[in-house]
Length: 618
Image (cartoon, helix red, strand yellow):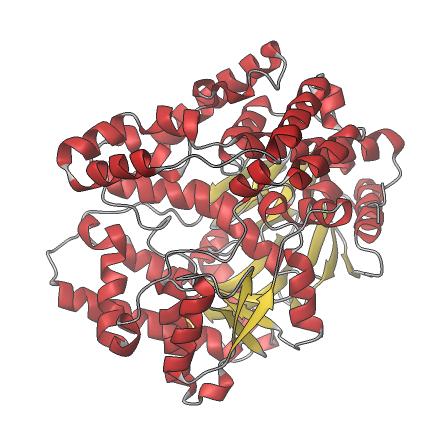
């Protein structure tokens, strides 16, 4: 279990808050006893594979590292940033750059710096150790999990209706925000400072694409990419202990596995796994992953993973992901597989081929109108599917406030071209608030390595032209050159993971579970939407046993025309947001997102009212 929480500020006032979070953390994680650090105005609790403390002898300054540093000021570490010498180097870096030091650090970390009575907290560019935080009356508190932090806020805990509306429509909160106005999120590439009692959160990494300074040949770009990936994989491989690689049928993971095999020089040193349902599914990840592994001469182990919802798995998944990224909805019992891989199989770290080039690298977009919708960020006001589920006045407030967040997000993008702005938006929304929570959940049992999301690689990719980033052109060329034997293997066209849209329409069990879940006390009672939601779930359950999925041939023909012609692409982009809001959010997902809020915010309120932690039900 990976856990980090802390309170920074006046020791007397902070003691009660820290104690409340410690009790909540223990209650949420039975059998887990956090290690405690008390150092004047700093109180930290952690359950971590790697944690280190450094006190500057000649200054009133201390450093607390949760995680590991793979390089410090471009110098690669030998002890993952945990040795006295390496932490002394971090101290010197802070002396030279102050709170800008985050830009000179690479790895997977949440680093806390106390400089006298001032504090700085920073998270790496991949965000696997992101934290939730609040600041009140000179006290800064933070925690890995929202449920254990939010009830400790000493002031009025007011829901952020715009952020809730954003979650219901997009499946995540805006960057830096949460369901509560007083609680923030410190995610990938973000840092937080409390100087003179004033708190400020900002980015230390922004995915703003710049115009290439020169026209570089494709061959040179491929050479540079190959070298950067090789160096990033080497840094991670040296630090990893007992690693395993999830292998799909796509491009990213096969390139990563092949590079690991090449560097290890021993196929037995690289172990891969694939999980899901029905490994014999034609052209699926499992079938293709087996072919890739066979070609490389490595073992690929299949883990059957049906993903079933129960009250305990759903509640645990909500807790681990703090209700974000639809994790509990689509992967309710992933944490059970992680525990099995760690406990029974002995794996300690996980290598992931996360997406360097954006969300499935869509075709190059040509209008600014499609920038946010192409990153799955749309306005709640366009979605009529919630009108029968949420009280009209409340829905109107959510939609209005979320529209302001939408416009502010569009105005905040700094890249010049529409395609670059879309990929920047993917990092801001999809990566910080969708991909990072998935990795954070996996980080409870493993150290997570994402070599494609190395800071140097991300800095480099910002200077490449749009045309080589769309459709993963550059990565495909690198695969062809580096590992031609793998480039010849077709990519998977099907996943082995459940299709929840199909399952919810043909199997009443999913709707039945959500109905039982929402029948318990929770947030839906607080906002008066429970009768509508329960009625909708009853209707979904009744129709599921007899429904049949309609043919999508017409839709498929439309998509092919829209992708291949300029007029088609233009029409598609101009109508993308409205079509997405109307058709791409199936009924089960709307209902399930409401169920997540029902459980998470209901538990927060229960803990605040009773001041006694609520133990998850078995």
